Amino acid sequence: MPISRIDLADAGSPEALVKRILQAEPNLSAPVPIQELCSRLDILRIEDFETDEFEGGLVTDAKRSEGTILAKRGGEPRRRFTIAHELGHFLMAHHVPDQPGRFLCKSSDLLRVTAKEGDQRQRREVEANRFATLMLMPPHRLRGAMAAFRDPDLQHVLVLARDFAVGKEVAARAYVQYRPERIAIVVAGNGRVQRCYRSLSFPAIICAVGSPVPTGSLYHSSPHRPNIASDIAACRPDLWIDVKRDLRAPDLYEQVYVQQNGFAMILLRLEAVPEESAEERRLNEGWRHRFHSGRR
Ligand SMILES: [Zn+2]
Image (cartoon, rainbow, N blue to C red; front, side, top):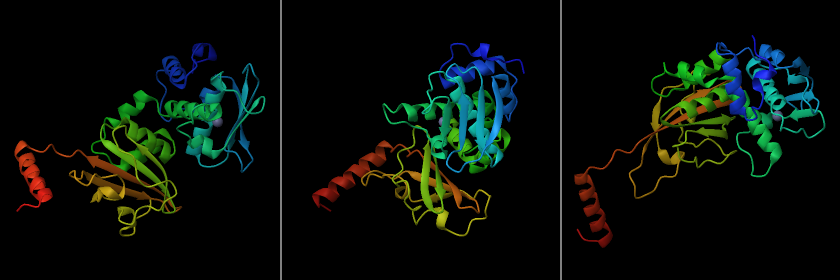
């Protein structure tokens, strides 16, 4: 691996950094050897972090001459994401830690995808997560892997998680961004909505974070076999999205994946409402007019 920090000069954003790294290492294989990359980029040690409060940490100086990454022990995908996140803090010179020389990141920081305006701490966590995601799932590799997939399916998310050695939620987040369809993946924990990742064209989910998965959802019907993505089935669209009463409801499909530990993913796919033909529109309008005016 020939890369060194000199290759990254002037790159400040997550996107610019990952671009430079991939230019210097065009043949980086998947799963990306994140620990080896760290050691080439002046991270001298990666140590176990013995704490319940934090998921990861980085010990370094203001000049970033070298660093030590701390990562909680646990599943390999989770640990790899933590290491990549801390490497992001290390490489982004404008990231200033709360305490001099020491970044400490909680598990909620490692899930953060948006920041409140003006909140520098949240912004830096979002940037570190963006760096980690791009680094562990390099866009050209991800596009290559996804070219083989047909219709949206949670099975693909499991394949990506396995092949890139990332968590299922990290894979799900990337998956909805790279698919052209209107899809969303709702992450649930013990029957409650925890987080939702949507493609740009998917409307907002009406279920608040912390609320139970809607009763009519496929999630509740028939016991699902753990660790196997269910069949795909149509559902009532108003379970998940706002449906205007006087418009034709779009078709919404669900697919469910559950684990024994209570973690679940629900894939939602919205089908475009077919354009009304001129004839249909004339008939519908005529009907609506008669209905409203009370004539028969
Ligand atoms: Zn962090």
